[in-house]
Amino acid sequence: MKSKMKAITLFALGLMFSVAAQPSLAEQSGDSMNITFQGKYIISTPCTVSNDQIMDISFGNISINGVNGIDHGQPIPYSVDCHGAPDDSQLSLMVTGTAQSFDDAAVVTSADGLGLQIQANGQSMRLNEPLNTTLGALQSLKLTAVPVKDPAKTLTEQPFTATATLTAQYE
Image (cartoon, rainbow, N blue to C red):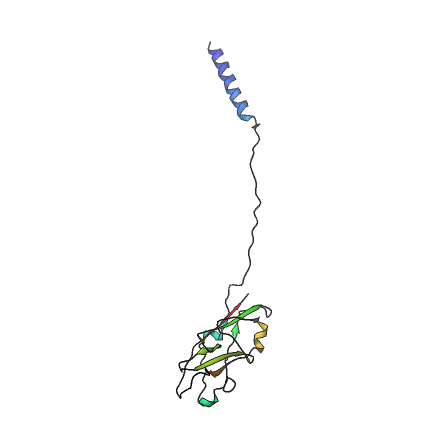
């Protein structure tokens, strides 16, 4: 009887090993999906305008009768460094400030009726709107601030100040 038990046990163990050793006959099923990645590589270094320094532009004494939108213009001595970007990089240059009601290219000053018109190569440059150019073209772009007056007002003798921000961004 013991030998019969032994044979049955060995037979059962052999059967278990043979079932475990058999490769699975059921095929695996699943799904696959293609993934597309996209983006735009940009240079994350911002441009620096005039080494991040405040530009002080002095007009000195101007005759009230000499404010005509042509005379007494002062150059805006700016520089733009876009940290190694190529000269053909698209660049947006913008002067941000509060515009005079009588001239959308003139910054409001502390003197009633007086504005400072910003000009790019002699042409008025609308405030708060980008001037699109290239980084290389900046070398020949001259910015000027020119005193202008509101035709509906009479200027009085007084000191004046004005503030604006020059921003450069490139792609």
